[in-house]
Image: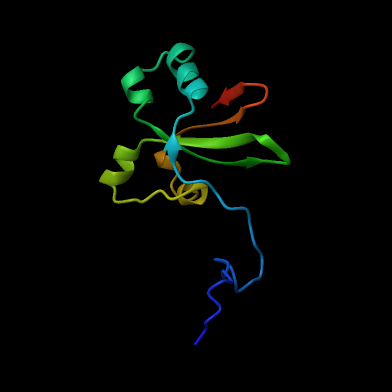
Length: 110
């Protein structure tokens, strides 16, 4: 038996490579949602029902790139979005991609 409960095994323990932990899906950040409503003229009810997943962008801690998706569509298709990599093979679920830098408050949405 393995009684070393204080030592966590990494999800990728076979290769020994630890990657950065990716964030779970979250509500849209307020500046991103506001830009989608004001600049892109999207329906506010739709925008605030969307979720996004993100990952760090390079070596800057305040910058991240994100993918926006509709959780209702994912649920209807029986897909559980857990993090950024969950959407790698499902480009049709991704509505928007972009980057967000909290320190400069710059938002780029594609």
